[in-house]
Length: 222
Image 1 (cartoon, rainbow, N blue to C red):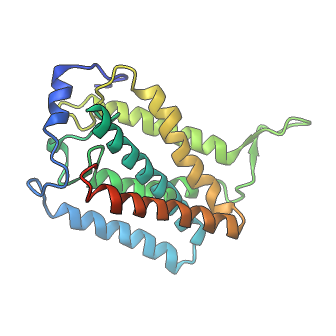
Image 2 (image 1 turned 120 degrees about the vertical axis):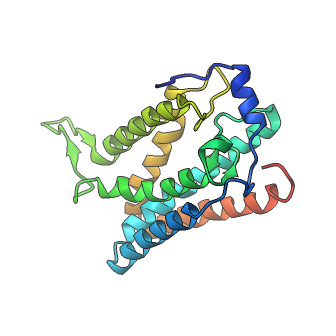
Image 3 (image 1 turned 90 degrees about the horizontal axis):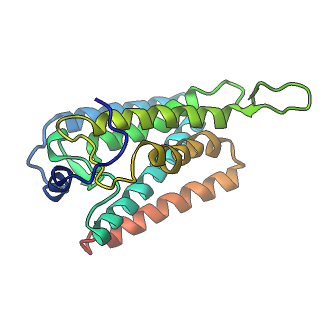
């Protein structure tokens, strides 16, 4: 059921070679429903003036897109990306490593992570005497990263190849450390930055995402 590392198998390589990026062959109306749910969540947060949760959502989602662009570029250069999604597991593939359903989940993951923090986001766990303890933001980021890495290992073990790992050195541990921890650090720390730093981060992050997509998609790289 769970798969912890890529196996370099011919089956995995064949599945990657068959991926049809941005094909509408499997498209169905769940695409619209999921979009409506995401829109509702963000609009609801806006109406309640919960701007920090919106910043958290945007911060993580932007990091997610930068990672997916990088993964697609790696796939173009080396022949295989670090992770892929199969045609059979989705209604629409945005880039070789991310489908619509997965991407929309990540658009909400930052909001969920930030909302799971204590009301006082400066809280530290196990603080005692001279020991300052552990930041709730860091602890939350590591916990969420571990949960997501373990769930990805389940997806990698599904019979339809919901997630495909080709490289034998890529799996749960590198996903946990190099991917998901940065995701949730962004969602947990960016909202509480000083406004100028926070705005600079978000504008720079999303500006880079837009620039890369505008250049690399028409060029056929991703």
